[in-house]
Length: 150
Image (cartoon, rainbow, N blue to C red; front, side):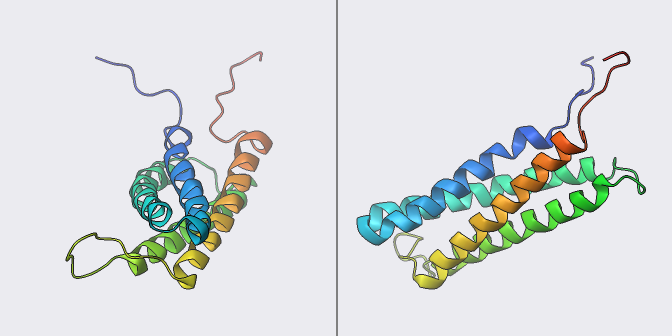
């Protein structure tokens, strides 16, 4: 029998949506000059990031319940969670708005100002969530195993 996982899963999973969403926003902005190849890539990356974020957020909830009610990290964790959820909502909305329904060819349509704006808003929320996540780990030691004498 394998021993249980001895470190939090959340930090390992967040890299996928962060990378996909960051590159999606970059591709969205680049699409203003590069056209279809860039906005198509942005849509695909946004879809992958939005799905991957569900796993990362689920793992984050498992970590959230481990923080004590009196721990000052709980307040930061709640703001981290809200910022991450806002990022997910912005990217999911941007993705839904660029879907070309009914599917009569490519499932993605060129994004307009609203879709690109939501992508930028999502990236801003993602940056806030990442900063707060760093504060949780490096400032409060959340998810860090402390061994006696170290």
